[in-house]
Length: 272
Image 1 (cartoon, rainbow, N blue to C red):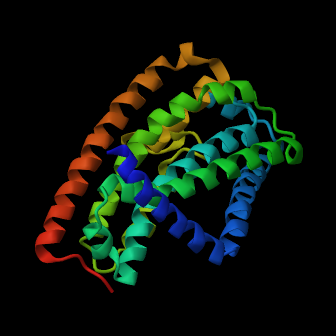
Image 2 (tube, rainbow, N blue to C red):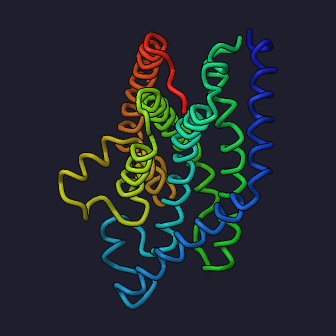
Image 3 (cartoon, one colour):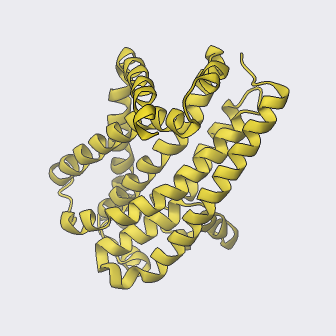
């Protein structure tokens, strides 16, 4: 069964690779986005405190360096948005091209279709993240324990399950909407604002803190930051919560998407 899915998986990946190569500016924009993100965090830190290190930030998070704090947030945010964008925007692209029904009628399983669409993005994101870590080390004199960061990778993978679930649910919503662009834009802005990438969640109003912890991004970021700074022993509560919420999103995403697709098949998949 697995062997029969490898060929369509490869075909979907090759198609996305060719599309990626036809828009070379995407590579440049992705690289610059990471640079702007960390540079912005550094300027905010210096602008608020007059220096790069902040005793207030250390008291709240255990990190005194704004750059180290922001870089870890950037890693999780970029990795998480890979799934959200990969699932949702590929469905949107297929809708605009009018080819989504053909893909769904093809003799391949739905996970193969989505995995093929997102796998290239995952590989490129990992390349970007390695590039960022090396670049920030020299450009911003980043003080970060890379061994501790590698040890935190299992935590990132646990959080990725929840992010995949959210991406599947969002892809299901897109099947219903005539113009999903505004929905996706608002969703991505919400994820960015509540990811805790640039600031600790504790400074947010209580209601927004609850919303942030209800999404898989901020809990993943908090758990990884704590593992990198203090080790697994100090991050037990964060990891347990992350396992719970990721499990919930996996189940929710699967059920929501399957229900959405079933309804879409009844009324017909929309195209443009």
